[in-house]
Length: 236
Image (tube, rainbow, N blue to C red; front, side, top):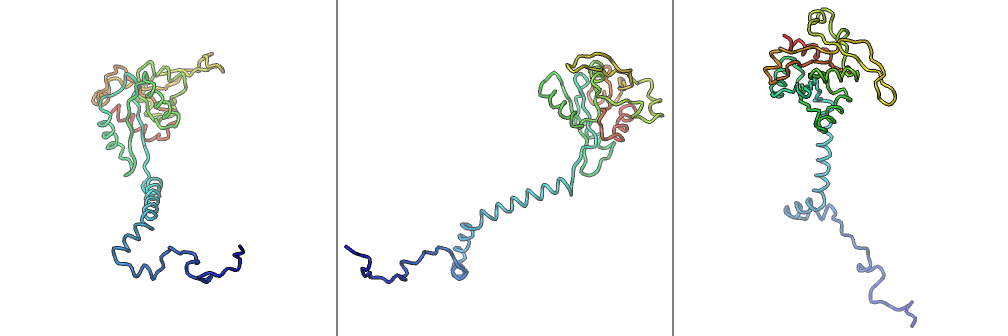
């Protein structure tokens, strides 16, 4: 049967053939009740608004931390192995009062038992990132650190007058020269890499029990003035 020219009951432009439009116009929204407008907002806009607000909050927090209220560690002390102290928080507070860092700056005092693998990795990571300024350690670790070239030459780091005043506490060590396989082949000339702080009342006050603790300045410290101040603090 040929239906190409068959008559229909409806014209081609009848509303039933028109594309359906489910969108709301301004006129439609104005005609909604208050409760219906609130529901419409929840259905179509609430999620978008929440996403935008979260993004703005994240950006604001990032800008606040990086620019407006930037926080920086102005001195980091690591107490290693047998030279660990019992009262890290109390020493942290005491040093903050002594050094008086900026409003958003802080001091870090931490213990590291390097026989624990996770602590050892944390220590090495911070040390590699120049995030440790001062190490207080036993004699055996001092000697090991010297061979690895970890510590600053105190004759160059300290003012000459201060160095002379502390000459009775100066400890020397030797940096090692190694081949490509890491085997020690020779030692450099001995240099003053450590300070004997045994008998320091402050070390004992904050729970230090090591008989011969050695204070060393990390070779890559970026807080020289504060480090010199903390040396005076422990030896005053």
